[in-house]
Image (cartoon, rainbow, N blue to C red; front, side, top):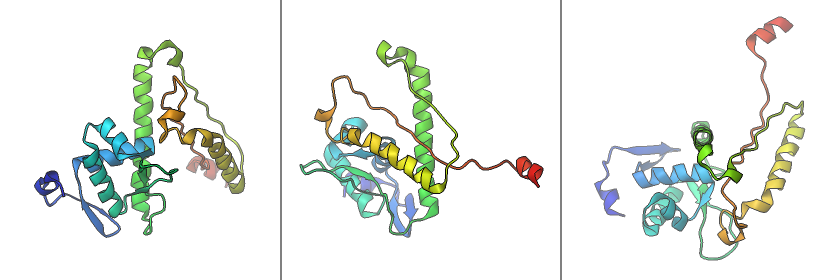
Length: 193
């Protein structure tokens, strides 16, 4: 337990699945960071948040103990990457929705920050690649498309935990894919009746 834990007001709690964890500035920042970057070690979190790695490690373990995060798969070594809990033992739609809303909010915020600041980026980085499409798919085809995108991105995934695997000049990129069915508008349904 840290001095911050002892001095935090006792009435501020975060409830999920019956397991309560007091809100804490560092834990909140860690959850936000994980939602933004996917996985992070205590050392990486410390560098990004300006805290000690020991403090970040303590709070990451607390978040894991209370079921908010879990260890991410990694290949040996001492580095211990963490990620938001993928498969909650008590999946609550509200908790999943909160993390989904948080992730989409961070995506939108990052996009707006890029648009506002791209003119200040080095010339070779002043462009982005964005596209959208509408395709008529079955649920199985939608799953295959998602799996294909994951396979295409797989060779680049380990660069988050392995900085030495990053080529010179590589920067973190937001890669956002959303596959969802387009629902008819109420007026369209009335016209078809």
